[in-house]
Structure formats: C-alpha cells, structure tokens
Amino acid sequence: MHVLVTGGAGYIGSHAALLLLEAGHRVSVFDNLSNSSPEALKRVHQMSGSAPELFVGDLLDADRVTEVLEITKPDAVIHFGGLKAVGESVEKPITYYQNNVVGTLNLITAMESAQVKRLVFSSSATVYAESKELPLVENAQRDASNPYGRTKLHIEQILEDLAVSDPQWSIAILRYFNPVGAHPSGNIGEDPQGIPNNLMPFIAQVAVGRRNEVRVFGTDYPTYDGTGVRDYIHVMDLAQGHLDALGYLNQNTGQYVWNLGTGSGTSVLDVIGAFSRACGRQLPYELVDRRPGDIAEYYGDPTTARLELGWKAERGIEEMARDMWKWQSNNPSGYPDYDLEGIPEDELNKFIRGARESLPETK
Image (cartoon, rainbow, N blue to C red; front, side, top):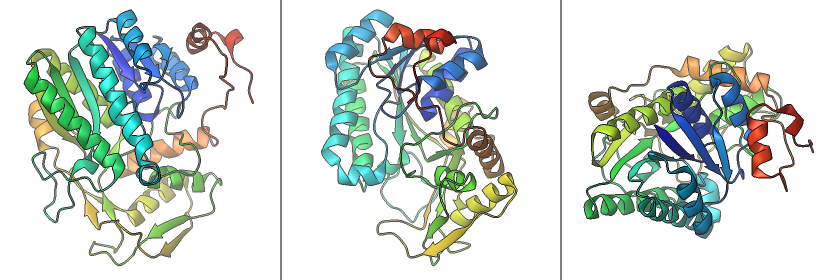
C-alpha cells in the first residue's frame, strides 16, 4: 500500500513512517519542516532500509496539497500535520484554527479530488469534557476546554459529516492521550522546539543538563500521591495503532473512533521516579502550586481498540522512560540543526536516502 503521511517528519509521524516501511508499505511524507527535521527521515531510511519520499509544503497551501495528492496518488492518508501545544493555542487561537482546521479542509478537499477516501486522523483526548467518570470511553461527552482541543473536535465533526455524506469514505479517528518515549534504538525521538510543553521531554532535558529542575504543579490533588495523574502511552505503541487502524479501513468503510492509551494513569512524581531510574540518578524537582485549568486525573479506556483492532499498549512507564532516556542521551541537543532555506526538494530526498554529499551546511 502507498501511504501519504502528513507531518511524517515529526515525532509521532516519523515513528509511524518507520513501522509502515518495515511492514512493506511505500511511504510519502508531506511536511513543512517547521517543527521537524529531514534528519528523522534519513534515520528512518537507515533503520528500515527503505526511503520515504519527502514533499515539502504547508497544508494551508491548497494548490500544493492538491499537487502532492495528484503526484503521489496514495491509497490512504495518515494525517498528523498540525500544531499541538495547548498553551500556545490559548495565546494564538486563530493560528491554531487556521493551521489545524483549514489545513485539514484543504487536505480532504484534495483527497476527494484525487479519489483517495481512506484517512486515519490523529485526534486527541483533549476533545473530551472534564469528567469524574474514568476511564473515558469513546461515547463520553465531548467539550474541549482549549483552542487546540477545539480544533481537533471541529475536525472530528467535519469528518463525521463527510462520512455521512459519502459512504465511500473510510475514516479512523484516533484519540490518544500522552505520547512519550522513543524508538528503542535511540535513533529517533521527540525534539521539541524551545521549552517543552509536555512533562517527559522536559524531564529528559533536565536529565541531560539543558534544564535545571522539573516543576511539579500541584501536590494536593485527590490522587494517590497528590500530583496529577495522566495516561502515558509509548510512541511505538501509538504508531502501531495507526497501522492497525489502516488495516481495519482496508476492510471497512464508514467512520470509526478509537481511544489509544494504556487504560491507567501515572502520577507526575512516578514519571520523575521512572526517569530517575532510567538515567541512574535522582532528578531534581520543585513542588509548586497548581496551574489554572489542570485537573487531577485523566485516562482513557482502550477496550474498543483491543476488541475491534486487536491493538493494546504493550509498554509501561519504565520502558517509556528508558527509551526516552536513550534517545535524549544519544542526542542531547536533539536532531542536528540544518539550514534548510533554499535547499531543493530533490536534494533533501537525496539527503534522506543517505547521500552525505548532499548534507546541508550546519548553522
């Protein structure tokens, strides 16, 4: 199968691209490289033995999206592309609605034009309303509390309407919780720009000395140790969920929703403890007041994915921390920082295929 992966040079996208290639699929990547690196795809090639083809472009450029669909003519699309920081979405809501919602509209419009009607969409557990009834199931109330979550909810509603209007569409909506970890080799992983928005990459940067300490926001929650509890899922388990969903869509039309998570929560202090064990020293942290809007516990029920996809999370918090530490210790500053301005697309693809003579000059 030929799969187009939007955002395929990013954190989750690169892991999914690797698994797709290892499974024998052909992979094309569409990415604007704003928060990702072609280095990730080069390493994916080195690990899989097959090179993904990179198309550089932005989902807001409707003509470019249409052009790429016409060139690649994929059998299916996995859609990771978009902005994903909750805090930033509060500061820049219009930017988030433009990138995530308008970008997705451009994508599905181009897919319709190219008669590509098989889509796996990267949604989020942030679409759910705050609830005391845990774990969250797929038919729980949806009422996102921030612009990022609302963009995901709007996209879900658009895809639901699309599936009703045209029964030829096969659409999987995957709601996942807190992706963490890295490939066990340590070759690819999460490389956030600036200050990490999420807990584990921040902890990892403390472990390699890029940050001084971890701030624990709130110690008086009604949880087993007083700190916030979340459902963390290993990125490799998450990537596998996308392949399983794609396989399901090969046999079924319509629109489907699945939670991808472990089904249980882990506290902030336990995450710090697991990472301290992984790196071999106690990491420093400071206990501070709660942040406005944070909730005590949040985790989902992945039963439907297990029953319908045969999927379940295989890795626990110790493996998540171990693999994240291997990635961060092997790459303390993340991927190499290349100056990509003006580099032609064919040269980037040569670079991905391992042609070192096409390596862009480092900054």
